[in-house]
Image (cartoon, rainbow, N blue to C red; front, side, top):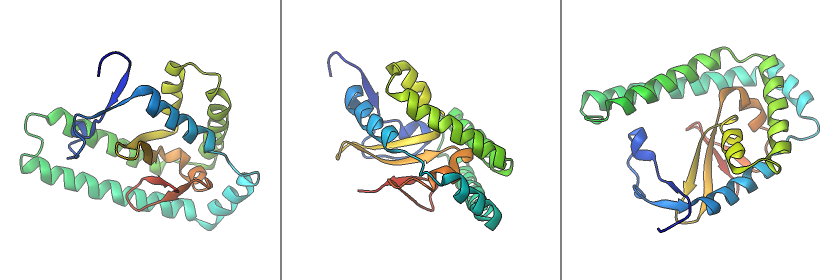
Length: 189
């Protein structure tokens, strides 16, 4: 791997075992896939009316409760691993992940309809600004709606994304995504 820019597989920093530990992908290849992802994320014309209906029906609260339960379960799992020495020598990873999940859980309790409207506005601005942004600006833009992006090293594509809590209802409208119980959205194939 001489010259050029690369992204490295980073699951070990999260305490997750991965078959691709230490592998990397050319930055241009990963960025092309992310370009396609961002350009494919479009809100339907009637998203505002549908969001109002979902809020009235309580779907958002139900999704938030499911996500909070998933986060609490993950925190318990990580604490058990910590007690058994899983994070020995990498305690900083454990504490960073715990604090991150606690912050996400707290944010889920505070998502309001106005947050959804602000998230939609920023989402629309991100997709509009994307094609005119520099790579450095795109790296910052992608951090706004996403908590994480999983890249498949074998198939050379993004396989899953994790959104920030305030974008939950919006991601439900995306035709290219399928939601799962693990908190990630998977790209339709």
